Image 1 (cartoon, protein in one colour):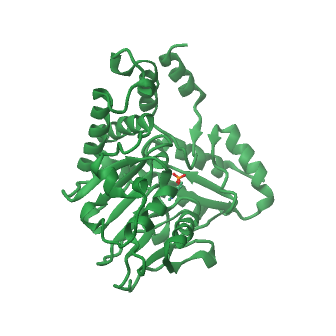
Image 2 (cartoon, helix red, strand yellow):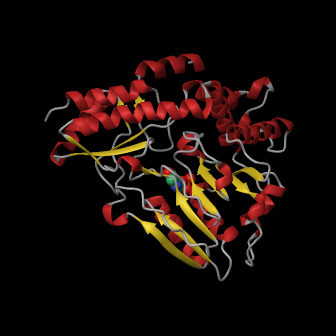
Image 3 (cartoon, protein in one colour):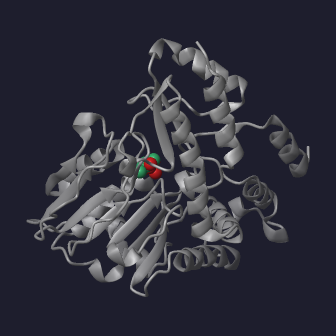
Length: 366
Ligand SMILES: *Cc1c(COP(=O)(O)O)cnc(C)c1O
């Protein structure tokens, strides 16, 4: 089958993909990515078999970096990196690069990934939990008032993919603010100058698994008295322009295609609007339908990307999943730690998929 035929067949199958990650990507991005695996831009070589130092790949990574720079309006002191290791690895680099031996790093424990980041950092020094909503299964975003000024950094997670809460307004503080934005980057306006570092695993809203986007204020690096292993020192990655070791070439290439798709489709402004349209539609149904309950009830804490909900009568869970499957809805089962259901609606999801889910909910009876 040709790529085109494969795409047409996929569109006919009409699966609504609510996967939390790795996540949905636009079909046209996938098709171009597939072409590049066979023959990258007609150069006679595959993206999978060219050197990361080749002219072609250097152009790809430079373009990806500059599109991130443009899209997020980065001031000159910020660097863009594409590293390996995932968002989880970046929580370790956070402590390595920002925590001095006697200093304190604070964490907002707003969800499973936030908690993991906090616990992973503990081996490096003094780590405190600044605020949490864990006692209510993270069904609200923790309060962020009165951040102390004597911290080396404070780490937040903007959108909590598993519990479905999201921060609305970022805190204003002089303490270096570090944010895991894996699951809502490029879906909201960000004033980058508020942050010392932002990072995101590509596989939620940017591209396929493999690459990790890092946006870091280079002036905030090198302030600790810690000896940092060569591969963990962000200054080395900056100096070598993300090529200190082999970067995840394919994931970076597809992330570039996806950034181009996003810009062609109206950029972050439009992605934000779409996320509001999809999430309002679904929350409205959850709130109005007597069978369902939202996990996050506090309106200011509700995620526009991952929406967690339950059936009031859990004995109906299997029937609901079956009804979803029948309607071609995939990836709706909640995370094993929360249960219930989770609709992950990243940038590439069309409102039609949300409407398909709402329709199943409207017509669902025991
Ligand atoms: C998925 C996710 C992670 C984990 O990402 P990896 O790339 O698998 O390490 C971390 N933080 C958030 C917010 C996530 O959604």
